[in-house]
Amino acid sequence: MSQRVVIAGASGLIGRTLTDSLLADGVEVTTLVRREPQGPSEVRWLDGSPLDPSVLEGATAVVNLNGASIGRIPWTSSYKRTLVSSRLEATGVLAKALRTLGDNAPAFVSASAIGYYGSVPGRELREDAGPGGGFLSDLCVEWEATARTAGSARVALLRTAPVVHPESVLKPLILLTRFGLSGPMSRGTQVWPWISLVDEVRAIRHVIDAQLEGPVNLSGPTRATANDLGFALARRMNRPYILRAPAWALRLGLGRDMADAVLLVDAHVVPAALEASGFTFTHTTVDEAVAAVIPAAP
Image 1 (cartoon, rainbow, N blue to C red):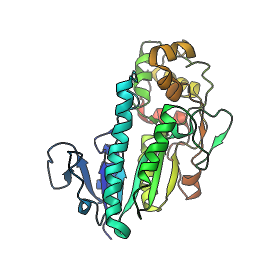
Image 2: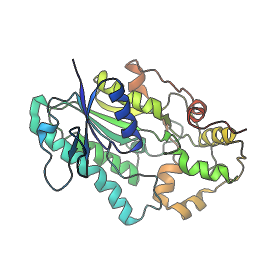
Image 3: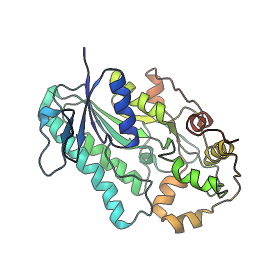
C-alpha cells in the first residue's frame, strides 16, 4: 500500500534529509510551508488560518520538526520566547487538526529533545526517566504535553540528541578547531548525547514503520563525553585540542541557560525504545559519526 507522510519543518537539516529519504523510496511527501506553495506537494500554514484537517487525512504519519534553533546564541529573553513559541504554536496547530480527525487521524511523530532530562550525572536515562530542571527541560515538558493533545492519534515523541553534522552541533566546533582554539568544555568529561544524521533519519522512519508511541530517545548507542567528540573532530581535522574553556567563562559568554543546557549538560541518554524494537545503528560510536561527515585532513 502506498504511503504518504506530512512533514512540518521540512526546510531544516533533518527535515530536508528525511524528505529526500522518503521520496527516494517512493513515499509521497506533503510539506507544510510558511511561504507561497511552489507545487501540489506543498501546503501553506501558520498564516493565521487554521490548518485544514483534510491535508493530514489519509496520511501514514505527520512528522513535526518545527522549532527555532537552540544553537543560536545568545539566548536573549526575546529569543527564548521564540524558542518556546516556534515549538508550541506549530505543535498545537497540528494537534488540533489531528484531534478533529478523531479515530481516522494518522500517527503524530513530534519532535522533542534530550534536553527533557536536564543534567543527570552518573545515571543511564531511558525513556521512563523523569524531566530535569531548567529552561530547556521545562520547554520540552510543555512541548510534549502539547503534542499529546492530538486526540486519538498515536503520538510518538522524538527526544533527539544533538546531531553530529557540520550544519548542527559540529558547526561552532569546526570553526574553533580550524583555528586551533578547541579544547575541553569545562572538565570535558561530561557525557554528551549524540546521533548521526543518517541514524536520526533512519530512526524517525523506524518510529513510523514500527508504530512506536510515547517518548523515544534518538541518541547513539554508545556513551561519549564532550572530550570524545572534541578529540574525534580534532583528529579528523589534524588540529590540536588543548584550550580548556572553564564553566564560568562559558556561562558568561553564552548565558547560563544556554551553557548549562547545551555545553555543560551531563546526561547518558540510552536509546532503549529504539533498540528494544529492533533498530540497529549505522554509526555506533561518536568517532564513526564524525568520520562520516568530516573528511580526514592530510
